[in-house]
Length: 316
Image (cartoon, rainbow, N blue to C red; front, side, top):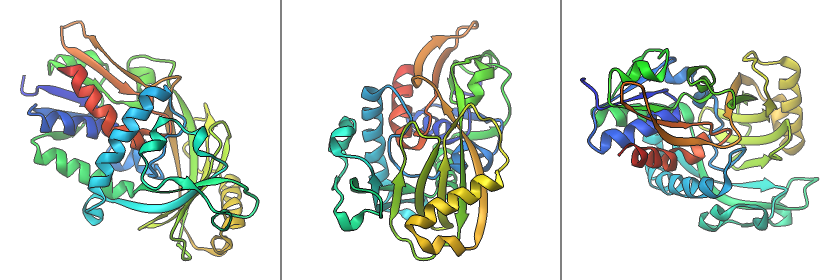
């Protein structure tokens, strides 16, 4: 065997898991069915914030560990794509958040003048906002610097990878539904619109964890990301024009300037949701160790480093 470990899946979870293993001294190959630019991670808005992910206690620890990693990466935003940006999450009080809230620097109740019209409460925070295309490129370069490789290759099963390496990490997200198979993982479709930024500098989120239509405005270097949707068990990847119009209209009520902003892109991604993240170990028929690391819902970026380190501990 030429590899110590094979990670199946080339999105943010797979690449981060591979980096932790490679920087720990293992020879690692990533098998990715799609190039990074076509993974669900590439479509993500990129805001660090636990959203649609369970179980709460483990998510808190994973989120805090990832936050600390992003705080370091934010010192080099042009290289990593990670910036610290101030913004407001409406409709929330600190008491409604998990234990991770105590670790967020500067988290506080929003003042009335910081809330958009129609909202009576919210939280203000300065948190990582990740430019995903830049960040995915950074992750790949970091993996390659540690001796890892990325191969565009679809695995028929974890056992196939287990015949090539003594350790297999399954980070296939929604693909685990067929690969494992695990019918417990299902899509939560998210649609967004990217427009030319009319001058918005702070992020804004108004997203109920159970709502199918959400509102978020995220200023990224490549444009202003407007969202969004969270539609359970919707598999379509084609943007719906009526949904896009509704997204822009919702965001324009908060930032009127976006109503006439030039549209740069329409995007749809499928969040890999599950009742709980599957982060556990097992054994393949040929004796290879199998570590599952998937089912992160709408918070893959938010928990990526914490889950990667936990996956590495399980592989020891």
